[in-house]
Length: 306
Ligand SMILES: [Zn+2]
Image (tube, rainbow, N blue to C red):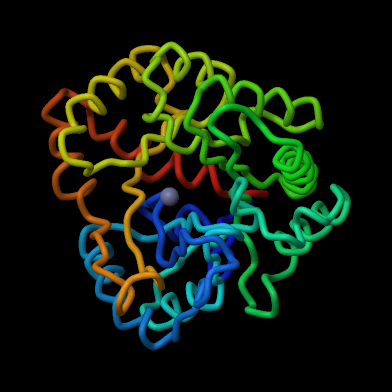
């Protein structure tokens, strides 16, 4: 039976509804050598983010995928605190962001050590938090994969393959996605368990089609960015026409508590998809069954494992 590994334990598809596959509860985009990096009190994070979780829940959202890996302020304990305070499940990743956010210990570690670390978090829990990692989040450079990033991708492919986890990678250029999926397949894992995070950043739609046909998840995850709705709807209709509706994920890439800002900054709500975008998609002729596929079934299938 496929389950989603969440902060509230494993959940089945029949226990969940709409899932947002790419959001953030907590992020620090400074590198880890900066003073105060990734530091915050749980009470402050709860105070800022619990109301956003409640707004998402009121808009029909039943789970959120946290997309902050090691390197950009992953704090599974803070995700867990927000989750416990709201009774709302969050899916937390293992994995490491790209250079220059790769921490010194990960530069120093060899591929085997990184593999064992990621597998340990996917099978056990993240640093004594009691949170089992639900997926692997990575990133690679915009102009190609560095040797350190390649080491991390290979380790991730091996760890993900061991438990059928999905790998999502922040990748701006389609050409670099192709290289990454080549590397994952050479390491023995599958394009079908790879999410191209920020697909919309690649202007060449032919690459969206190519990677979707190859089996990758295509993720349009800046829904709600002003002025992008029409382009998103056009791309979604083209993917549906190409028979790739079961490869498509939609999210906002919003939130979050930012420790670099006073009091965590001003969070962006997780509600645009439900309240504004999906009604526009219906108006454009997308039927209810397809909306359900895109917002319920696909995110569950992408992140769930046996
Ligand atoms: Zn993000």
